Amino acid sequence: MTKNRVLHGQSMLEALVAIGIIMTAVSSALTLITSSVSAEKESETGIVGVNLAREGIEVSRNIRDSNWLAGQPFDDGLFGAGLDYTAAPVFDPAANAWQMSFVPQTIGDDGAVVYRSTGAAGGSTVGLFIQAAVQPGSSVKTVFRRLLTLDAVCADVDGAVTGAVVSGTACPFKKVGVRIRSAVQWRLAGRVRTVTAEETVYDWK
Image (tube, rainbow, N blue to C red; front, side):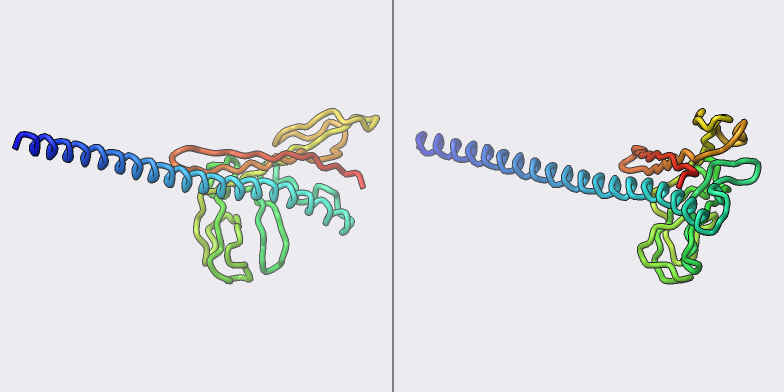
């Protein structure tokens, strides 16, 4: 009888140990799955953020190129009233054209919000990321915000580049380019992420 009780106690202990091992394995697997999902979401939003920042550069260059083709000053549309160099790129799907909105002044302003189209209203493509002063119809607000800084690049009387000036400041002699900084910000898992792309375009064909 004593021997049977000892064996029974050992069996219970072994069962508890086995259950503990199984629960540890399951917990580790769940942690791994959660980490994998978080990493996937981080990667996904990071790719979108980088693409939005790069798009801001491409839009600015496209406006410069379109000005050349139209025989307009190279920086037409790349600055606002009072030499405002802070803007958000806005796409008009109906006109199939980009333009700058100089309404937002900080990345926290409403005009810096990036929306995603959920319908074809106004010719917009479903899934297209868009910006506007007011949220467009058939769109949802995303976690992203984007703001461009289009500082004037100056040259002296000899044509040598002297540097860039910020909003509200004119070049002392001649403006020869635009220093584009495209900043994209988003919040994920309680943390703010920011990515910035920068490029300088010139009035040199």
